Length: 139
Image 1 (cartoon, rainbow, N blue to C red):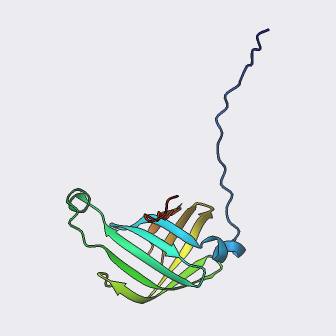
Image 2: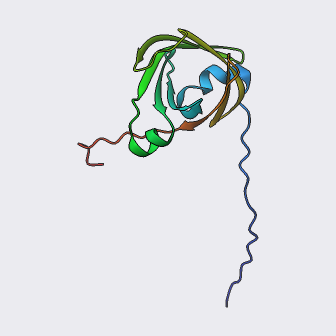
Image 3: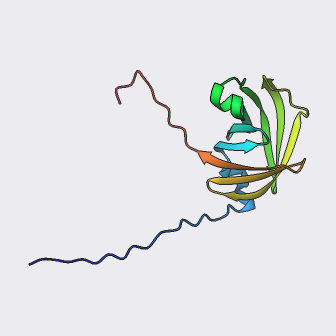
């Protein structure tokens, strides 16, 4: 006896539900990557209220010849409503104009974050998951 099964293929669309404003300060914790102006940023937001942003220049020379100098800024963060404030306390190869940066969270879903800076620039970010590899481990 031969069993025939008919499958109906239906594309599955993943619907990302917006994060409630009341959960922004807990759900934002993690690692994010995005583009801000002419730079790519990798941002780690930690649950102890600190952050580190690594900045990488973009453009033909930076991307093809690796001539750019990477920089970083660090400090503390705070969220009130839909406003995130970064207080910069340290920097390397970066010279921030302001020691306090404020952005409005325009959209926030589990793995997507769109920020609007106080200067009007809009920057999309995607959550990234970092898996560390221990070279000395046999696993």
